[in-house]
Image 1 (cartoon, chains in turn cyan, blue):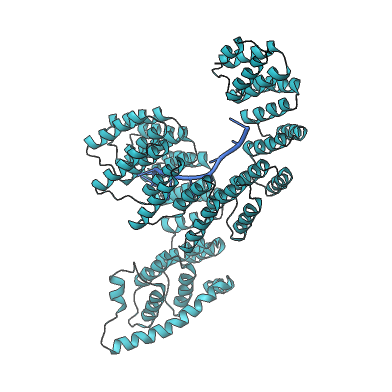
Image 2 (image 1 turned 90 degrees about the vertical axis):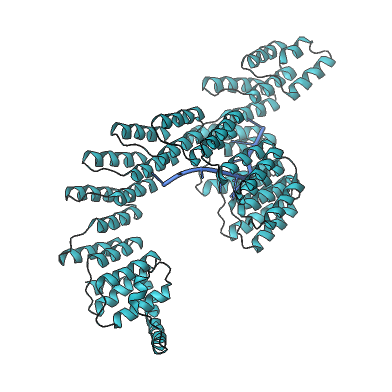
Length: 623
DNA sequence: ATAGGGTTAG
């Protein structure tokens, strides 16, 4: 069965036969070495560990072992096979297994497990199951390792229900799943976004008397948080408390990070104090996460309080902590402080890394200091810190923002010469740069290079193309891109529709915009405040005041809160084409919502005041 | 099992 199976499987495996044949040559080399008096005993190599062994040497070693008499034990063979499996050379392992079979070396539970694992990794589940059948016939009971291998096979083959069933079966058979089993299955569930199934699985296992390890809880909490279900993860924390399992610092860190990411900063701070009361000591990660979050929300004094707190408790700030601070300060335009922090880092012998410099360069670019950004880039190179794609993207974007797109392109070439490959964002930046420069041909060219280099365009790429084309008045071309996008089956979100609707209105095709707007309902895409604002100002530009008013009412009835950008165009239209009374009412409503007249509304009112069509009370009402 | 930098409509 073994032979039939191996021969009937993919021809790719024969590639590795030649590998085995070559081992004859290497074997010869060993002979020569033996004559020259050097001892190359396979036992010595096995004992000294196979961690860093090269594939060729491992195959060579196998040849030695096969020839050696008395024959090495099966344990020694399985050590070698598992080392090759760790290199992910599953074909070679399977090939060697076949060799052993032909040489009459019988397999044992361990080697069978290795083969099952290899077949599973190669998504050849049926072959894995065939081996399972064979080994059971020979009287080897599958161990937990065997079952966990199969489990990962099911998970990678997207056969999630089979995977869950297998674990249940294991429990029925009296085989307690261990941490690896749990983690494998939970990982598989997450790969398929089955968040609640993952939680349910753990609960069921607990009921059946299994005790998941802290790492398993950690894997679960992390996966749930990464998918945005922080509330579910918090429930899990409470469940752990009920079961008197103390969540470790890692679990708290994960939850705190998730709360921060989803803007629940104060909940994150509450959880931080809660972990203290529970006796879990925060780590540098806890502090770095919170400090970064607080800085990003502009809560500088809270952040600095935490920083002194951690230093006082001798939890030393590390590169992450400093990078979080430097990044936030640089973005805020506090570049002096950012550079002072950089110096402080060096004073404390914490090495600035690529991220540190990238943040500094980004801050300088954001605040129109391109020359200083270039200097910083040169400094990092001089210090031996290698720029990566992100660093280049930041600087290329800096060039584009300063209308030096050709220089940005030059930098892109330089980065390619240094062996770095541009990614989607790199191309997005360049395409946007050329479009904003009004150079449609070059933008088109970059887009073509992107496609031919197999860099996948993202929704963002299309949005940039759409926006850029609409902006330079090439609505027709934009609509072609829009069609391509629809055909490609991408998720087209409301922001994309907003760009197209805006483009149509700008080109004076307000009716087309209205049609597209109406089609949103059929596609179950909800217009947002920007959609309404764009449509309302489009209608206003065509003097369609009644329709604009109707849409304004529809918007409020549908629960979309108007913004300053809703009121101002509407007020201007009423001032120009409508009556004073409704203008005054709109202004009152806007003021009661906390908005005020923008620059163009105020300048319009001043103009109308000047020609005597309005009185001064309007100007007072506006702000 | 946890934390950091880049493109983003009116």
